Image: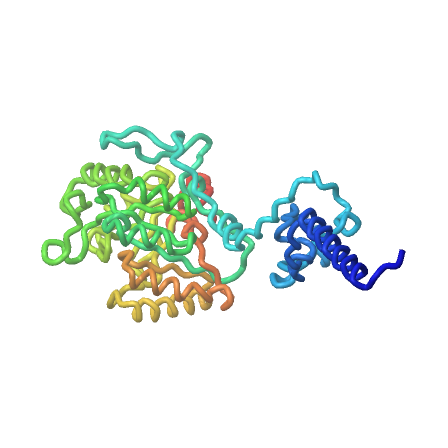
Length: 399
């Protein structure tokens, strides 16, 4: 049978319709096309996304330094082959702490604490507090409460005493906190609460004296040493009673100085017998005595020394104190033995600032700040040929 052209055309269109229907069914089954993938989505996950546990670098390896921040944020995670050989379970090592500041060990070596009051060097008194006494086998407060010092140090020694401590609490606290530990402090017996200040001073390794209220030159006019002052008009027994009261106010002391603030006890010291009796009491109790009058003889019956320079006279200004400190240093270099002792009446801010400025370069200038117990001398009468044997005085007098 012959196929006509009309039949062929109809067959073509029928096949086309069937094909289109089949394609639509296939597309329906496959679903909509997927969204195109960007380059950022195709990239591997970053180190921040993976958040691996950081491995502690080896402190001995220079290659363990941390990468710059920019590089670390885009770096791909390390593969198992590239990771450090330490197992993942190894705990992260803590960083090494920074080294301690050099001032801490230096302070520990330079400021050894003075020991607290020793009961074996005390005896009860009627004043509500114990007073010093000689200990077993002649032990003295001079040795027990002295600041350690290298006795082989041959540099010129310069001693400083700051008086009237405790009278002004704020100034006293600042002086104890800021001044070098080799400075010696003389505490007023009239201080209301000296115990906290004394504890801080001992912690700094500062030697302590009792400031004795001796009758000054201007007594009765413009100088008042207080109601417990030792006076030329009093009997010997009363003066000794007042001396013991003053000593009871300052535990763990190495001795006493005959000055209170800028009063130097000149009128009392003019009576040689009274002065000698007071010194004998101090010696019998294992204490030293510092005479605050430059040019006065060395203590006749006590281990001690006379002050060489009054650092706050004629004025208490910083400039005057710095000038006098320079004089004291020059005197120490010229003396034989090479030492000098200075006294400041009050712990004023000007005095503290002047001392700090002067001591900042003292060792570079070849001198050393020394505690008062390193520059003592034997009693002047004991040094004479007909004097009491040396064994009658505490051994610390040789220092």
